[in-house]
Image 1 (cartoon, rainbow, N blue to C red):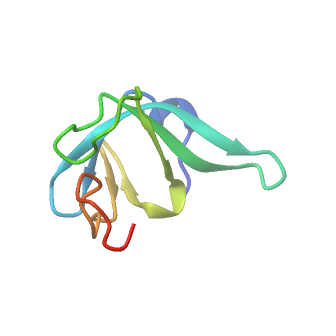
Image 2: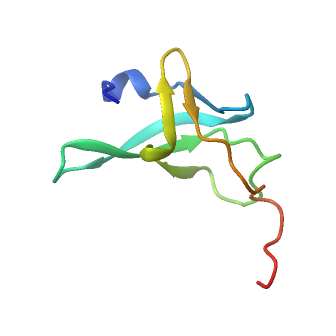
Image 3: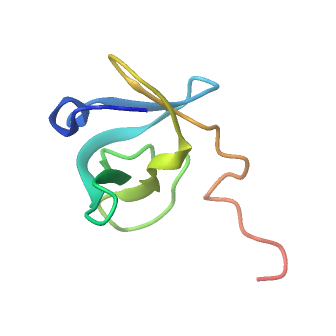
Length: 86
């Protein structure tokens, strides 16, 4: 998937099921491959993520579509839910 880095900044990110994840604050580049390797998200949905930080980084391979918004694979586990056995 080809996208101009500046066109990603500020876009809202949703899962494939329509759940708001956050807003693109920055892109992480892989200089060896000359590609975006991850998206740094701010304004993160606190109903999904429970942490004190300002944002999260999601691998770009999770992105399925980029247009007026970014669509990423649906999270299979609620990040707020405790892991069993941890």
